[in-house]
Each structure stands twice: as structure tokens, then as C-alpha cells.
Length: 557
Ligand code: NOJ
Image 1 (cartoon, rainbow, N blue to C red):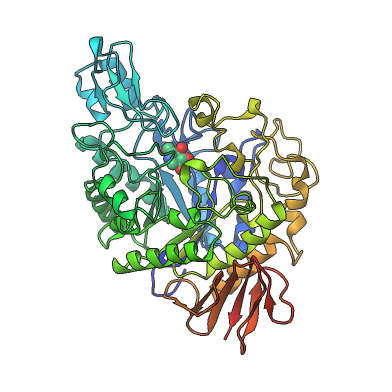
Image 2 (cartoon, rainbow, N blue to C red; image 1 turned 180 degrees about the vertical axis):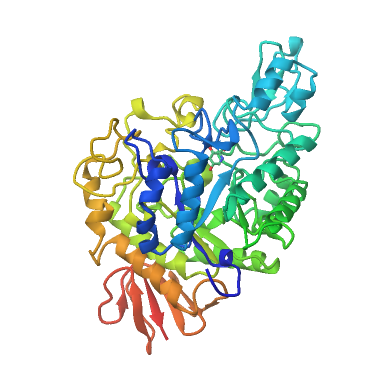
């Protein structure tokens, strides 16, 4: 935690999906006690910070993204006192802590929504949310044609005749960010947690808070998006045109909110920072979130969605660095999270294609797991060599694949129900991770736990556990450990710039100063590594100076 550049410009942040990370009390669901028990693991992995998915009091209609009280921890996960202890302990390990904040919506059980329901149409209590009369005879049709990201209409009608807006599940009513009390409340919540020592926040649906005041229908060509706008470089102009007019995504007025949040963060000592979950149509629009007086960083989903293709990846990297660099912000790279298919399973499909947000669960062709793992190893070295910060989603360091065969009876993601059982949802990337042993719960829960893990783990996950991989120099875990160690020690890595080296089609080689080169071979032929270099780290065996297809190497020049 030293140096002059703020930590968030180059941090490797480990994402903890709290339900599935480690279960301390044996109820089959991960919790704060579990995280505390695994801090030494995170320390030895070498991450700088942890981002913890929502831990607040919640009826769990969307596993915590439906918050009933932002100042309470859900009893399933622990207590505020335990959260404070975790923050302190993590700091003692040199690890910063970033909780999630969910400002776009609350739970329908939040005191404000309950009050709005009780107070009835036209009441001031309803003004904190987005209530409207319906259209058509008797107002029986929704106020507009907006669709929920989880499927179905974005409006639900109450027995008193009014409709309320929910861009996600009906249990997640959208707040009205034009209301001063909403703004004041969130600033107060930020202060509540900042004063308990958190180092920043991940902002959920950061691009969704502001709605067009007239709530017009969607523009004609807007495709239904699952978690946000689609991203396609080919029709960038069209995307910009559609997007500035989009009635509820990425509206310009949203930045005003974050300028105020930045001031709140700056009231506290020690480089507190925000990362926005903002699905923006272009790198330019993403950069607008991270201007100097706004948020610090934003996830770069273009990198996650890029195909396993040298041209596509290079274009995404160049565009991101150019646009973020222009506003003085660092890039943040991410390959997986709790909303998308794990990248081992994405890359393990032969078809080379750009991964769109709404195609997460319809992979093309059978999975070649070995190929997926080989590419995932190379992708990790590429990601960790790029200028800026990086996110590691729990289990990616173990090379976990998506669990694609969860029985329908155990699926819990609201997407499964809301899509009329056409989209299996995100449970496959949320299965509790394996720590040790040869049978479930694989050390996820303590011995003698009273309940099985909340989602069943594949029977063969023993061979992917932390215990099984530790000390095996060929394992994904040891690759991540070495990469993170090297990244920490090497002066060329982290924040900064890169220069591309000339390479044949299908090969990427980037140089960083002083004296570092990362080569990734995305072609189908072996590539001869440049002379006068030595291999610092490689994603697979390098023989006779040849880098095999789907491999990457870090070189000292
Ligand atoms: C984005 C989160 O990452 C996702 O898990 C959640 O369902 C939605 N926002 C709604 O809060």
C-alpha cells in the first residue's frame, strides 16, 4: 500500500461472490466468517483488494442485489460488527475492501417501498420511486414498452391501479434519482461505510440511474439487452446515435450524481475509490464516467466480450487505452464475473466470435475444456500484462468452467423464471468454489455442516480445488500466483503505457518499459519468440523458443 500513484490505478482486485466463496457457519451459504478464514489464501494469491458482492439485508430475490437496508448486513452473511472486523483484518493483510452499492433500485421490502405501497397513489412516499398510471382503457397497459433485463415488462401493476418501474425483477423497484432524498440517502450510506473503513465501492448498474423525464417508449432499433447495451465496434456510430437518446441507459445527467459521490469519497483519507458497472456503448461513453471529478474507474466489458481473436482483442485494448487515457483514467480489465459464463467455457468453444452480453447462455458447439483452459491461461497473462488494473473472479484462478448441467430444479437466478424457462440464468458461474478434499462440499463448508452448498458442485471438482492445485507448478492456481508475484515486482507492470511490436497476423506482442514483452499466440501455428529475450513466465511449456498456439509468455528483454 505504498508508492505515489494511487493504488486503484494498478490494483488486482479479487471478486468475492459472497454466497459461493466460503461458508463459515455450515449453512451451505458463504458468509463473512468464511471470507475472514480465507484471508491468508488471498494474501498468498497476491491480490491487492477484494470486491464483495452485496452483503446487505435482503430478501435475496436477486441474491442481495435487492437491498432492504443498506446499513445492515444480512444475517445469512453476518453482522455489521463482523464486517468491521473483516475490514480491519483484511487491512492487516494489506488487502483493501470494496463492497458493492446498489443505487438503481431497492428491494420491495425496503422501508421506503413499503411506505410507498401503504401511502397510495399521488403520495410523496411514491415519489421516491417511479410510479405511473397505465395506458389504454382503465390504465391496464404498462406506461411504456420498457423491458426488464431479466425478461418480461419492466412494469408491475399494483392492486390500486398504479404501475411501478423495475428494470430488473419486480422485487427490485427503481428509485427516482430526481428526488433529493434519494440523493441524500445514498451519500449518507456511502459515509456510513467509508467511516467503517471500506476503501471504495463497486457501483451496480451505474449507467441506469437517470431516466428520461417523459419515460418515452424505447427507440425503434434498440435490441433487448440482458444486462445493458450490446457492444459492436462495426456500427459504433449507430450505437452512439441510439444511445444518447436511450430513455434509461447511460444518460448524460447521471454524471452529476457521481461528481457528488466523488466529493464524498474525497472527504475521507486514504484514496477511497469507485468502480462503475457501466455498460456503455462505446469507449468514449465509458470514459465519461471516469473524468477527474467523477468516478475513478469503470469495468471494461469490451475486453470480456471480445472474441479469442488477435485483431479484435488488439482493437479493444487500443480503443480502451486511448479513450480512458484521454481523460487520465486507468483501464481495468476483466475476463469473468458473476453475471457471465466463465471464460474457460467461453474460450473452449471452437467458434471464434465476439461474446455479446445477451448470448451468455447459448454457447455455440460443444465445449473443449482443454482448449478453454489453455486459452484462459494465455488470457490471464495478457490481462495481467496490460496497463491499468485487473479483476479476478473467484474460481478463475482455479480454472473453473461454467457448470452447464445444473438440474433445472436447483436453478435460482430470477432470469430462469422471468424468461419463461428459456434462459438458464447465471447460476452456472456462481457454484460454490472447491477448497479441498475429494467430495462435496470440497471444503467450502466446515466439517459437519448442517446443509449442503446452496448449489450442487460437480463431482470432479476435487481435482480443481485450491488444495489439489497448490504446489503443482502446472496448475492454473500456481500460474496466477506467479503472475501476480511477478506483476508486483516488475517495474514495467501495472499502470502505464504499452507499445505493440510487429508480429504476424494472429500474434500479439506488447512491450512495456523497462524491458518487458508479453506475447500471445492466437494463431494456429507455433511462433518463434524474439531473440535476446528470456522467458519470465509462460502459460505452457516453451520448447526451442517456440510459443505454441493459444499460449502466452512474459519475456525479459
Ligand atoms: C448487475 C449485477 O452484477 C447483477 O448481478 C444484478 O442482477 C443486476 N445488476 C441488478 O442489480
